[in-house]
Image 1 (cartoon, rainbow, N blue to C red):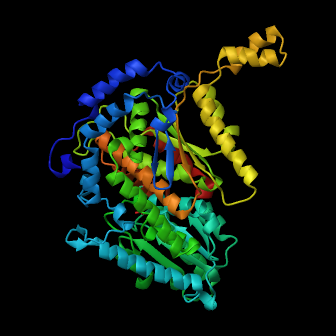
Image 2: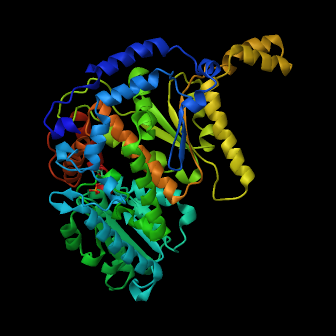
Image 3: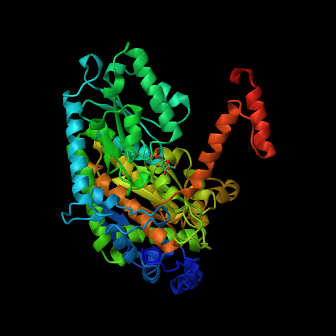
Length: 556
Ligand code: F6P
């Protein structure tokens, strides 16, 4: 990222010539309808689709013409996207506000050449740690390392939040068909005591292993849950030593040791990997335990496949770049505030939550990497769900709500479960939604359909406005052969790089998250005040609520 690593100022993107050219282009094409674009260009599908590794992206249902993509690519060029990517891959301190590199790509790299960070070859360190982790996990899986009363571990509970939770949670669910080690993975994140209590209810302490995952090892929620987990084990183990039921994944090993976790069970969470990019590190331990080290290696391999594509393909044929630029196109030029991700794959049900953190914590920023204002909006509100369930919940608004909501469909050609006919039903519905959003239904079509069905004229007139809608809602469709660990790795890395490219375009640092600090700080003070300390200077609303909460009998 040349501007901040070399001390140049980062300007706001709308100041660039490419941005102005896109504004002018937008004025020309904003009124075009996708139906017409398809009718005019029989080669549209071929022109606007791209393959990378095992993934195929159809982006032809976007409100773009043959001129749009070169103009967007020119923006990427002017914003130094390729240079920024090269800087990230080679370990420059692209996370300037925290003075760190962002080397999640090194965790899945197959390159052997040394990669130095602060004088240390991290390639060798990563390989060593992965080997140690796999050996440790192997002992758990095969029963060499056991719990109280020599019991084999059967359940692993990850205690972590945000990036120390969502990645392994999402991936464990996505790869459920690969969970064959006999160890069930559970995930507890919330400060709400219900989360841990309800997770532990059916579990046997003797066969339950806890992983405390926290980069800082200072996160209040995680430490509170870890402490309660320890109490639970102590109470249920009649004096046995629960230390062997704990592992930690952290960049703050000394705090984990102080907590009482044995050094051999403390794994590295690298300083140069952001929490939300850390699934590829020991943060994946619950996943390793559930799917086994070989499948975890395939996930890493998938990430590497996408890294190679991202770092070598020309901008115009680069899948993460294309997705990123289309996102900018809608967010900044069409004013679309949100972006939806709809996976037609039940096992990807946690993908939207995972991508929410990845995208919104990375790009929800208002200043450039060097602290100047960004005059345009960054980071869309990301949301989503799984198909076909979403069709019976929120799709109505996408079809007729009148908002422009660009979306990504994710679709596997094959599933892991029979019957194949039902997989085809799933596929048909996914294609149907994309087509319906794009086409809409005209008044003439509505009229013809009702006339054919024998609906009387007066009723036809009354229903026409309800049944017709404009369509022209854009979508991408990401097609993959089957959701294997390797494919999942490619999908995650695809979105990581998409977000990175958007950050390069907007000029923000995607690897810090200063915005979440204030809430943490205030919560610390408020907790003391709820427990009886004299309230500090708060607004009248907060003071009023505090007073009500403190006066409740159950809080006394
Ligand atoms: O919510 C802020 C945040 O710092 C995230 O970026 C991070 O993933 C999460 O908290 C958990 O942090 P830690 O791994 O240090 O417990």
